[in-house]
Image: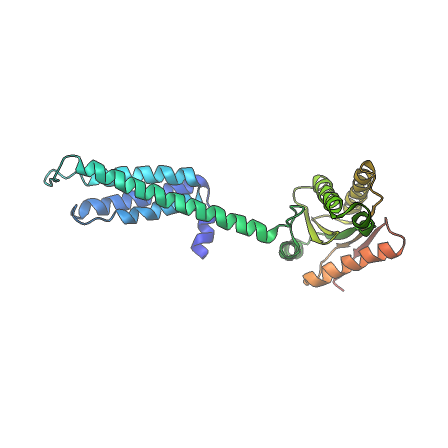
Length: 283
């Protein structure tokens, strides 16, 4: 597993170079072994590396180079085939085998990527889902503690969302949630993380962001979302609960619960409010 992670983090040129080295090694072994003994299957090693850790095109190129190498090393002056075209036919068969393997690997890779994306993404809005957000918060907590940086987390939901569903139907409700997700994402930085927690609730993580800076971001977000809803004539507002940690707790559960409680506190005070606190310690 460690080797796989190392290869996944390598640049494309490095993967191609590694594949070329394997082809050279296998080609040398192929030359040392009598032509009657086929070791063409070992060329699948560099082909697999190029396809899986670089891309499909790299896999095709490596497949072609491997087939040509296999052809060249088997051109022995003291070895005669039944027909002069036999080595060319064998090369075509080997190349088709290599390309088919490359195709299967690339399809498997795409399938795994899609499954991974589905496991981390909310189907409706395209944002991160609750479980993946939980993982990301845990990562950012450790970064914050290691680098002694502030960390802000916010929860918000749509006030009167049930009214939209009851009056206009769930299709309109889904459109509303998608519009909220789009506007919220467009108003955040690339390092910021937003997720749909469930229903009409969303969560935002602002790494390396202190109280004043996050206050500006969240106020702007609330205005942007409210303006987008007014353009659609949807009578909804947004309640936001946020907490900025100078030193975040190590518990993801505690962080999320405190932000969630602040959000519900904002709703109880009349909705359409931003309730933002500064936490100076872990407790």
